[in-house]
Image 1 (cartoon, rainbow, N blue to C red):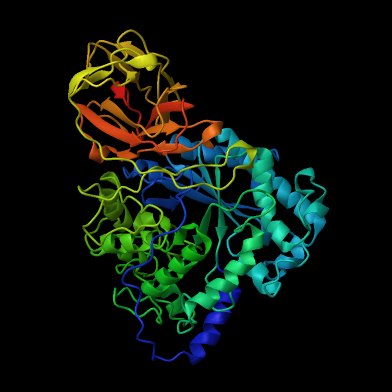
Image 2: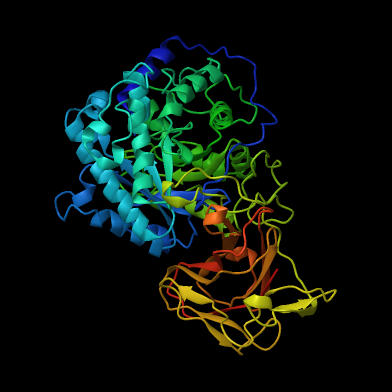
Length: 630
């Protein structure tokens, strides 16, 4: 949620802003994107929504959304007085999101409701040792509950708080804040400064050992003192970027004593629909959607340029969050739940309208890895009743084909995607594959920074010749030239492969079908939706090998995606290399071939080799794996 500060800046700026703008246009060829996709995030443009705990609209929509977010405000730890102060309410939201097949994304938004005032007293609150002791105690509980989930969690830290602290300290990260002074042993080594306050989130993740938590630091577009997104549109962007980055480096964007840094930047293009501001506050915050708009104008191009400069200056990718849901068909009234109630905006149409492919690519090239849509306040447009001109829910019907077809593969570090129609968008052929789902995560308990992973290679058909199952198993398939290859053929047993997760039952060696030989690994589904994994430990895959998986899926399954993966152990920094594949890119009733290319410096043996299955329905049936080779 934006503070009043942002809108005050807007009023002042609009008072003198004229129509004359610089002719400078957005860069036609952006620089190669910097920084890896964090471990646990898909290596394709993720799309997600806000949804309250206990609701099932996302699950029942039939759309394979990626991320489900919700605010965790003051009082969440004991369900606002209706439960024990152990974080059970928060754990239930995480479990619920995981079971439904979504990456849970709690938004830790607690500071402004702590005692002692509102947003204007943010600095005073972080300087109060008793307040911070309870505050960080709640954060620790959230990290513990997230660790128990055993799956990735995207934790968004305090929207707008860091921007307010920059404003209230006059950009001084060494201003006093109670960190070690809280008396929490985990924070004893950190300085009692605003910089130390920022580091405390990293330190607590480290001490809890919540290495599955992806930490996102919020970057407000007005943090430098000039709102580059709506108001100070003729000011050069780089100086404003530098002000923010220089303040944030000691808070955890730069090298620090915790040994880790924040994983992603989080930004919100606008907190309410644009016409809400126009009609209720006489403020014009609409962005020009033209691809030729000047970067010295209130436009998507200017915001994209700011994102690019932040990515280049920090080496971090972006999550865009709380994107307004208004479209051109909304009735410009307070949203009472009736058809098209809510205010107009153009952001959903920008990303999923006629030029959506080009715009998604443009923003992926700025470093954006996720688009998360949701209303920032009551009365705004929302996805259940955002009917477009065709009478269908706009975001649902426009995002569904994109996601069901596999989405958009993200650019690898140092590269950019080609223009519209030139890469892997929506599962089309000839696409650019940026590689793994993430990359190296620093081993141990520090949950440290991640390196970029290696690229995955396109799936292909492999036929011919005999393959030795090797130490991993029996005959694993055939090869054109008869060269010796190792792998798993499941001819005599499961060869150490086993199932985990509620959707899966025990895996067995079966004669029901085979891609090579006479048997395969049968993986039965239990009827529970969610994510399950079938895998083997200590797989003897050589360094830099490409692992080929053969997967048979019956027609009518409830599977939405599969992800073959390889997980290295401590010597490899617990690096995860995966190949997410949407069901729309697979065929039923036949054998599919999917490959995962390991980094050239991968370690051997692997800690774990396997396939992750995601299902969004109570489906019972059996999937088969066979001829897993390298």
